[in-house]
Length: 185
Image (cartoon, rainbow, N blue to C red; front, side):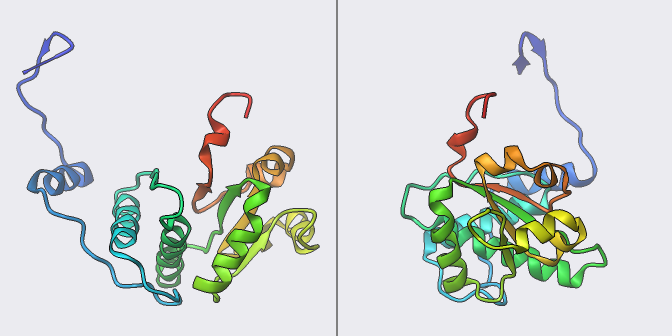
């Protein structure tokens, strides 16, 4: 086999990469995961696969792009994934860190409603001037950010607030990620 004109006779790996390649080569299907503790609802089969995909990628330290069609429940899959993070952090000796969700302002109420419906025990903060004063308090005391499971903000505000840019997040989740398709955004 040749790659870019160079002969390739084989690849040797070790450690986690060896484990990952072995799993990929066996063609082993993604394992179905139980609905996480605290998650209210039932995932449809295709949502279960997306949810398992996110957990699989997390296991190997990879980022993800969940690009299902509109209306197929990406929000629900992400909420299930956030519950996996929440329960794994409970069992971990590592300090709890919040995840950041960046969305268009028009989706704030949708996310708040979905969290209330599917993840009522999820502690979240909407970091937006129209939301409440807790965001201002969090900005003043960055340690308080990590008392939340999720901090929700908008694309415009993440560019404006230094405290959102410099905090060390567990995960950064972009909804409607086409908003970052060019360097100006």
